Image: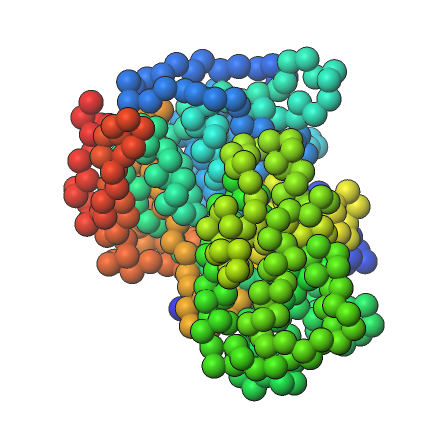
Length: 512
């Protein structure tokens, strides 16, 4: 289905990302739902004990830099519902919470809402109004997953002077992910027994609005640059792959541990590899000069088939370049890095003689930036905002691009242009199909009834309407019947089976 225009009211485009008078500078992302009313202090701790013998809190705390805490909303110590939601939903989430309040009979649908820090700002009574008693994190779901498993999140802790880091210890009620891999991990560790679908989204590549204009110095990512190729769809996908692997293109790559979107991007790249190599034009000879991802160059103009060009580009990044984020990540082991190698052959990206285009290929380039919160870093990097690493292109969800467009950010566009309702990387041969998001009630929940109400709401016509108004794709009744059931874990493994509608899962956590 086509995505409707995102503007819901005249406040919609003003709330998170505001434009300067010259339309080129952007102010910082605000504290969203509660207008910066995040109530915690350095070293603050909240009671947190294992409440169910199905799980054990384990491992080091999750971590985010202090300047990435813009999507923490509310106070977990006063909350009646704690939500850990995949971060790209920030584009609609104030509307989601207002509609949820109406759904459960709390408030008049005007709260939560941003307020300026002035005489009309929040009072303690306002913050403790039932319509505002929520705690919500809208950050990469992998970070939330780590926070659930460890029981803690550190904010800041970047300097030695921070002898006791500011931290959050939250008993989450509901977790939402952009993929089932994270759900499986939580199930393996006894935190969930069921995951249900609720909404869908798809990928785009955000680029500068000057992309493909032909002006000197401007990029031409995903454009038709190869006169030898006759199939325009093939040419577009081939050019996207070669550009993402190019030493001339600075890519904003995704945190491959914590950002849920990375699974969708990795899946897209692998499908593109299969599409290119299986296409009738894979054997077409193409003549060009090329700057490889290991910072080497062709010896002038060279001629190879399309498939050979892709393989040559992949061979250049078969192992991490010393200046790549892959090399830095393996050395530091930060942000939950759990790989001993980023070599393509060690990560399901083909064999030494036949490599496959995947996320590690882009991470292994010398000029790639790996984001921690892509929906903040990618648009700001593309528009060269101070404090952000300059980039030329990055994967985003179409809803994130649509938000920028509706907010008046004319400096960015996508692979199919800037027309709302037609966003996204072309879905040639199914390479960019919609991705379905899922929800789960957690074993840590202290607000089980409210948590179940929230899950019910997001899957209801009322909840679906809020999301589709924000550019997401609603699910059919048949799709809503799907999801996963997870058996009680044995030796750290929970067997997953397909959910067949309400009541089809064992619901063993509730019955324990």
